Image 1 (cartoon, rainbow, N blue to C red):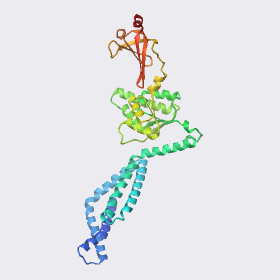
Image 2 (cartoon, rainbow, N blue to C red):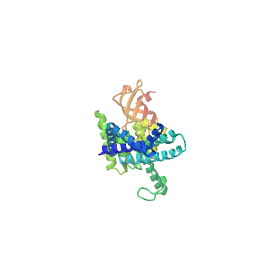
Image 3 (cartoon, rainbow, N blue to C red):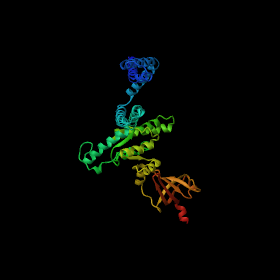
Image 4 (cartoon, one colour):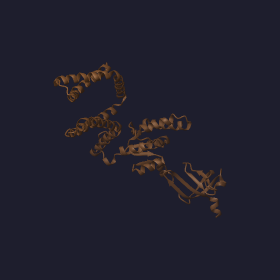
Length: 367
């Protein structure tokens, strides 16, 4: 049936083109037929020519139409909606541009060029609407949320101070696998909605399906943490379904999403922390929080530690506190495997962690 419809359409198109243009060809050939005969003959010739062409091209056209139909049926509704809106906007702009071209007496410009302009602007409009749908959806969401904030209402309609509405917290893969985010949420130290981007969830699932045993365990731990966040903890968790197809790196997608949502990235990745700061995106580093709540150690304090291994520099020994803080013991290589008293000489604290430098107390007494 579709094949017959395509053939009929092609024949009608050929007849129309022949009716409009073949009489001009007859005039150039000094044919003296009456004008209506020329028009009818042109329509018949045009229809016949394209009808003969259908035997070669109709199968390709039918296959193409069926491919388009299958693609449209499988496409999400949001893709079709925003793609169609973009197409409509592109065609409206093409119509306005083509109206301006009609005043030009050059036939190529007034009749041929509008066809290409309509096709190109319609195509570009569809692509913009289709590929930027996530950003349009977020703009609508942000606008709705900002309107509520201005009106002083929360999601339940209760009156609130707009300045007190917390921003969304966007989790990256590393902080989910780390697991401490669940404990922080349980203690109510993290306010606002927790956002899990779909591309982060896919990366986490890819890690959980890895052939490497260590990666697989880390991925499964991350999925368990997400289940705990969603089911067992008093926090609102949302899944962001959008994606930024033109961006490959997950970290770059997180930064772009944070800018789009005016949210805050939550991570324990030192490099992502620096990228967010460079691009003026708010970021919460779990390591910074962990360092902030660790007991304060001041130079001159004494503590007891076990020296476990030698350090990078000559004669150094390495030990650890119960919370995992590394202690570098100068002249501590001779004490490996022993528990000794040390005196803190300095403390280095960064987003990557905290490091304590110390010397054996016995050497201080000798001096």
